[in-house]
Image 1: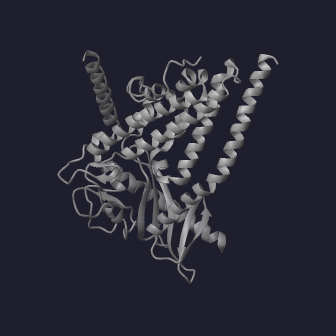
Image 2: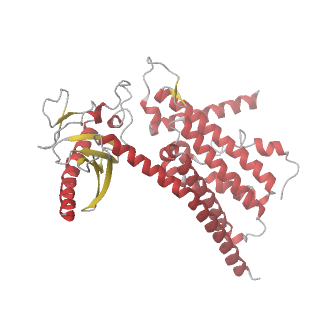
Length: 204
Length: 198
């Protein structure tokens, strides 16, 4: 059950760095690699995923004692899929351009392992307040990585960030950065960088 | 209550609630999504047809033709959606042509997933900021009879020729091929539709 020794700020903060879903757990890599060809796409995917992980976390943790153990995964998936569909339709109705750019990756949030993982590992064992903080921390950690990844790729691949031209005419865009190989290269370097920082900290 | 009865009950309640919430949300968002789809369609039709007063939607031979008409209700151009395979995936475009199918009035790429920097130039060429749509614009006025052909590394000098994008010959050819096939189908469909009326 809930360990009261863990402070609330730690519950939120662990998702940002120490247990970051992408950099440390390497979860949710499919959307991470697929949609981060621009900063805005990364941001939108991060926000949609955060909405889903937080709302389903609160619902699942509120009803955790009512859902029988044997059918919990089926129940979680229906709840998660409901929130994903809400988010998908919302984007299509109000942000058609982003919805078109993200394509099938919004419905695919259903199978993002960050979300089911947090329900199984955390929300189903803790109070709604803690579950919400935990989910929010994971979501913000996910947004941060997607945004940084998208910004780097957009900067090098198109010379802009959030569609604002940053680099001048002298810059020849590295097309590869907005293609799939650019996603793997940049993510690999980011994970390497985070590990290097952790190692530095441990020895310091 | 037995465990299995509880399992069935809980899952039934969850799915029923999910269904209710989603149908309410769908009722709210569907009209807006439909409106976006319609706006995009109308923008594409306006893009490829010459100046027209209104357009009629005509169904014939499994095709939808958008017949642009002037204020005297005479057809001035016909637009239709053409889809086919490109280098990586489907290319969808809106084609505009005169009612006698002798001259193209415009071409707009609606959807494509060609290689960015190469084939994607069929939609927008970022290396030519003054004229990013040069590829589709050259179709305006092209005569598709005989078949439209692609020329490489030279200026087109025939009324049925267009210039390929350097480094993206396959994508350029794909657009032309989709165009040639669909023009034939559209011509047939337009003939059918006129017979239906008369």
